[in-house]
Structure formats: structure tokens, C-alpha cells
Image (cartoon, rainbow, N blue to C red):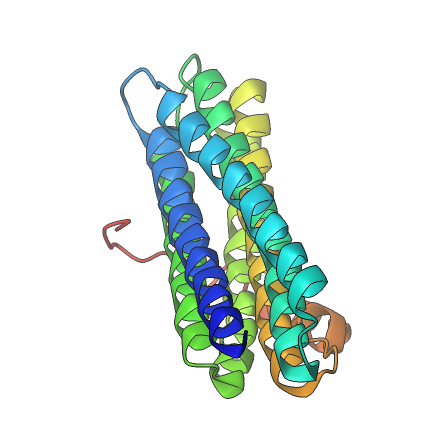
Length: 245
């Protein structure tokens, strides 16, 4: 019985990591689609999102079966709860990625702005790096690394502030089309929310180890300090010239 439970729990862990890898690829494909100069085909991202949704359903069934049939002890029970809760955040990230892909269809009918899109590229790269680091911290059960990843969300927020300011400037100074304005604002908000969900993921790693729910989102821990930091640095030197993958 113990051997069977250990094997099934390992399968659950591996399936969770696989879901995370798929979600990270979905973010990449969605951003690539949004920034593409070609006419977008969102079917790739749509199929990926359906796959992610099915994986969440499968994980939930596996997890509930383990709880019902094996009656796990405290540590193993926390592990299963961690996966149940974290898979929900992964599914939401996938939904946000699918929404980014949907915005691509609308953007192609209007003029695009290369400066705004450079920031979007960096936001996408950052959240994907954070998610990859989270999966590594989960695999190694590294609470310290999870805390470090959560702090990196402040950079995502800075990109968001910088992009929003630039979008509004472009709208005023260069008559950025209203449709493009909406598309860009929608996408940077979705990427910012993805960053918040990744912070949620890191919190579940801490719960897995300690049994305590610890708030790691910088904007909730020290909102005034974060707000001042964003106001001071949100528009300073964040655009980098790197490939998006």
C-alpha cells in the first residue's frame, strides 16, 4: 500500500510539473502571436489551453482519489493540497495566455507600436522566467528560492507601469488608435496578473513545507513602499533588447 501511494504521489507531482511546462509554452506562443506581424492564427494557443484545462481536471481527479483511497498523513496531505491549489493558478495563467492570443486578432487591424511591444516582450520573458524558476523550486522543494521568485514580481509591476505610461503618451502624441490602446492595455494587465498568479504558486511551496499560508506578494506586504518604488523607477531603463525566448 505504501509503495503504491508513493508511486501515485510521484505521478501526481510529475503531472503537475508537466502542466507547468505546458503553461509556460502557452505564454510564449500567445505573446509571439500577439507580437507577430503576420495574420495571427490563435488555434495553436487555443489547443494548448484546452490541453492545460484537461490536465487540471486530471490532476484534480488524481489528487482526490489519493486523499479518498489512501488517507495520506500530514506531510503528504499538504503535498496533495499544494498541487490542487497550485494547479488552479496554473490554469488561470493559461486562461490569461489564451486571452492574450485573442487580443492578437484585433490588433492586426490597427497600427502597432514597436516601443510598447518591446516592453511587452520583456514582460513576457520575465513571467516565463519566473514560472520556470518556480517549477525548479517546486521540484527541489526550495522555500528560499520561492521567496526570491516572489520578489521578482516587482519588476513585472515596473514593466506594467512603464508600458501603461508609454501607451498613454503614444495615444496623446501620435494618435495611437483607440483599438490598439485597448489591446495593449489589456495585454499588459494580463501579463501583470500572470505575475501575481506565479507569486501565488510560490506561496503554495511554502505551505507545502510549513503548513502555513504566507503572503509573498510585495504589493500586499508593503504596498506603500512598492508604490513609491514604482513611481520612482517605473519608467527608468527597463527596456532591454533580448530575444523573447
